[in-house]
Length: 266
Image 1 (cartoon, rainbow, N blue to C red):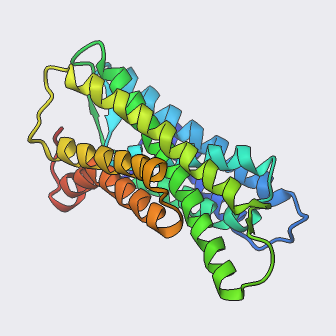
Image 2 (cartoon, rainbow, N blue to C red):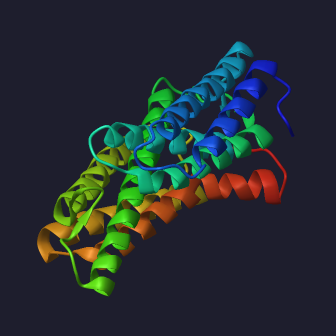
């Protein structure tokens, strides 16, 4: 269903147009694609804010669903990309990030989710904020891991030139990647601990099971890197597996419920 709220619809259309324009081919020295991408990101923020405002104005809670959560996750990853692009050249990623942003806004526009009460306890809002933040941190880790794998593949294929990516040594990029993993793991752990204290927590729920499996996968990755020296593709495979489990925990299960089965629910 297409949103009927005029401000949110206008912001969404402008954000999608901006993201698509930022995908246009441009010379590395041109600054306008980055400026357009930044503007689209700002409009994306207005879309999210308008959605939250409409839901809060109804007095019933927050707008939740697979696409709003995915949209906020992509927005956070774009924030990380924007900060990094001010210090290191990441022009090769711009078009991919812009396409992801356009797709996320389009999905949230077409499938706005539902307004649901989330304040079953005073800790519930914090649980949701921490959960969404962990999605963003792990999303940033996946983005860096993909660039790390691509650079590693180029190095193995050409076997020439220094091992660099994004204008920095691969080892530095690798450290940055797993800093995001560690930060995401801490935030996810806090979210799960707060969830355990809530009265509606259900151990047999598919979201709970997948979240705990994702948490265990990231824990194994951190331990494996610290104690077994996991590097390269061995480590990134664990990262991708953990991120996929975490994505399926809420976004995947809600997609099946909202789109495939076409029903509402928790």
